[in-house]
Structures are given as structure tokens and as C-alpha cells.
Length: 508
Image 1: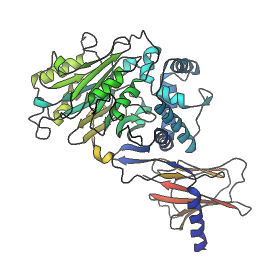
Image 2: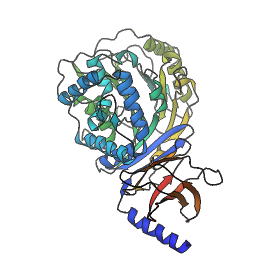
Image 3: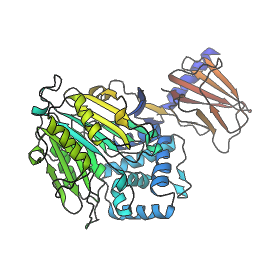
Image 4: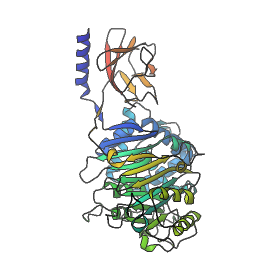
């Protein structure tokens, strides 16, 4: 029997080679979720959708449709019509959005929206990534997006024994702390197959494919704040600001000048038309030209760069950004900016810890969802996320990430999705600490008499009788012990003696 079983597993493995593959993995660092995806845009989108299907649907249903559009198909339809008529999205991002939808379907999750009375599609994903832009046209969110950032370098960091004149940037992402966003925060590590692109990471929410907060492998960071003037006389040929920032980070050399520096982000933003006002703080190592710039942009006046040379109030080699233009328009009063100025003018010397402390003390607000600090020369990233709307992220101990470790590719393995017309398993891979494995009988098939679970050695670890077309398994074996990471096989045996096997992966 054992020889027969191993033969069956061998045959099954051969059959799996004809299935779809998932170029991705999900893992935890402390309490933070990291999604690593690689390949072409379509492959990365597919892996994203497959591995984060439940979370993406949660954000789409409860934040995009529920919170922003009050579960109104009419208001959402107006926004979608506006988006389809006025936005031009690059082909690679369309491919990624289509891949995401395919990945969600492959994971076995329904895309049907009871609000829209149809399946969600790629245009819905793209619209969600333009939610900040569209908020100015449809009058929502604008007064709920309050971000700030502080960068320092040169003489201001010379006394710090770690920085020794090198750069550091701290960023507070302050949005309305909707619980759906808080529950679905993650770091996305993108490793492109395209030769004109580089790896980059995104501090995101499930479903976000643009760059709200990002860092590329050349150690260039870009963090976007919302501006305070949104006049839009030319709402045609628009591009979502998150996609422009992503292009500046992801392309090896967006402006084709022979090097990758913060000016590539400026070029990506200034070369496209945007609906809303934005303020993007960009930082690199001091070894890069213009190591720190702030790109101010809106639909009426285009884009301009603010540098330390434009500082009229701050001492030292420091730049600060809040939600108020200071170059594109004459500065107006902002209490958070004034508080930052007061702190820096009292003492312009910055250390890694003091950068966090100044921004938190001067600009911290209750709606702080994420706090991020990045030191380019050490690869250190400190990331803190809020678990609830009563706890600002900057008040919590951040998790330390190393950028070079996030970009490592030596352990990347494709996950194969078997083609099986009888049994559907989802989610696959499954993390039993977060979800059960759902075993669904496809239509027009009889109910299995029994279901057996085997490990890769062919050992029976669980036997289940079944009387319905659906079964949910918590991952515990016959000894009530939860299955460890690895590859497993489910074998369903029918009353007529026929059987079918499906492979699945258990991850943490």
C-alpha cells in the first residue's frame, strides 16, 4: 500500500506541473505582515491577489465601497464613470490589476459585490488606487488625510555616531483610522522581472499597488502627503499620484539621465497630469544628488521642487513637510509645521531617535496609522502600525526591518496551484493561525464519502467523514495537534470508488 501511495503522490506531482504558479510568499516579522512577490507585473498581481484575496476583498467592500461611498452603487458608479473617462493608466498597472483579480478567483474567493450587483474587476482595483485623487472631485476623505515628515542630513546629523552626516527620514501617515485599514496593513516587497525596473517596497494596505510610502533598492524613499489646494481646471488624461510615485521609484532611471536619484520621482510626477494636490517627500543617501527634496504638485500649477535652499524658517540641513504647500503657493499657517520649526530652531542637531521624537511630539495626531523611519546607509527601517483608533502608531515600539534582507531572492520558490475540477481548496497556501482550510465540492459532483489528509511522506494525518459539499478544517491532525509548515495532499474518495487528490501548502 505504501508503494502505491507514493506512486500516486508522484503522479500527482507530475500533474501539478501543468497548473498555475504563484510567484509569492507571505510571512510575519513580529506582528507585521510581509508580502513578497516577484516576476512580471501580471505575475506579481496574480500572486498578490492569490495570497491576499480575503484582505483585498475586505478593503474593497468595507473601506472603498462601505466607508467612502456609503454602500451606494449610484455614487460609486459616478466615480467609476469619471475614472474611466478621465484617467489613463499605464499598461503595466492594468496588467497587474487584471492579475490581481485572476489571483483572487484562483484562491477560491467570490468577487461578487452585493452593493454593485456584479463581480469586482480590474477597473475597481485601479479606482481604489486613485481614491485620494478622486476624493477632491467627489468631496470625501480630504479633511481626513493629515501626514507629516522630517528629513535631516549633513551638519544636522554630523554629531550622531551612527549617521555621521548621513541622511534619515521619519514619516507619519495620518488617515482616518478606519478599522478595516488597520486590520489590513502590510509591507509589499516587489521584485520585478522587467529589466528596466528595480525592486522596491511599499508600506501599504491590502489592494494598494501604487506607492503611498515606498523605498527602492537604490535606497530612495518617497512618502506622499495630501496638499491644501486642489483646483483642477484640466481633469483630462489624469494619472493616479500613487502610480506616478511608483514609476519614479520602480524604474531604474525614469528621466534617463544615467543615474537613479530623487529627481526621478520628481520627473515621474511632473511629466503627468494629476487631479489632486500632493506633497511628496523624497530622500536618498547623501551620496546622491539632491539627497532630499519635496515635490509639490497640483492640477493647476504642475510640479515644483522645494529644497533646503528654500527654507525660510528652519535652521540646519533639515526639510519638513505637512499638508501645506510652501513653494507652489505662498505658505499658510500650519501648527504642526510651526511646532517642527520651533523644535529644530531650538536645536538643529538630529539623531535617529530624535528625528522620531521631534516628529511625534510636534506633529503627532490621534489618527496616526503608520510611523516609518528610514536610514539609507544602514538599511534600517523602523515601522510601527496602529492596531486601533485609540492608539497612534508613533506611540508604539516599532519593528526593525533591514532593507537588504527584504530584497533577498535566494529563498524564492513558486507555489503551484493544481488544476482540479472536482475539489477546490482555499486559501491555498493556508495559515491555520489566521484561517481554516475550506474544502469545497465543485458543482455537478457527488459528495465524497471520506476525506484524507497526507503529509509529503505519505503518512495519514487526518481522516474526515463528509456529508456535504463543503467542509472547513482547522488544521488539527488526529491527535489534535496543528499541522506544521509544509506540503500536504488531500484525497477525496467517492462512493463509487473513484478518488481525486489536491496539493496544498501550510504556511505561517
